[in-house]
Length: 260
Image (cartoon, helix red, strand yellow):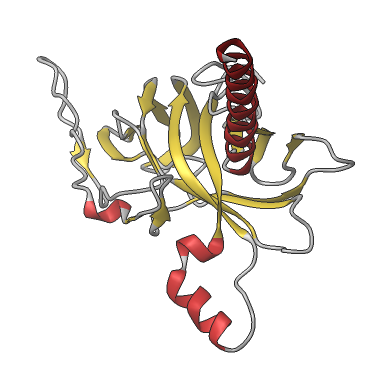
């Protein structure tokens, strides 16, 4: 009698364990997150293809109703719903190469060169956000760098301008003329550790804040034919090659690597 009871108990325990495993797997599938890994390479000088900027961004898909609860409640009050998704900020970084070039100008009515340069630098103070704004086509994606409020993966809003921005001015070397600081140094969507752009012309040297090609750069793209990878480039004033990967993995496949 006891052996029969033991066998039944073991059988019941196996069924319960198997059911619990299925339920856990189902819950994991239900909360699986979708990540968007963006890699961008900008060409800064058509005469020198080694003059580039790279940026790497990871975003995660979150329903708009969670990012905008007040708006979602208002929509529901009138019988509707807030559809679409926000691509919340997870992490971002950027890098620029060293570059020097000259522009032909005139100094005191004589031909002269204005020399312009900047040094290699990196930045983890990079701000971006995206969205899936067409509820009828979840393959359409908007993405851009910004200094406006961004929605974070922890489902909180963050204002980049709430963080103090400190810029280090030019270092004066002994025996060299001091560089004048011109213009404002303010928070931008991409803020390099070395924010200086150097000028030398007509016996004067000065610096201005370097402005990244990615500042306020935006994309509107679409994943085609069920693919999860976009590879494309812009044409016109800004030449940027970019890749967007949609995946369940939180790991950016190209993170801080200069490859696509």
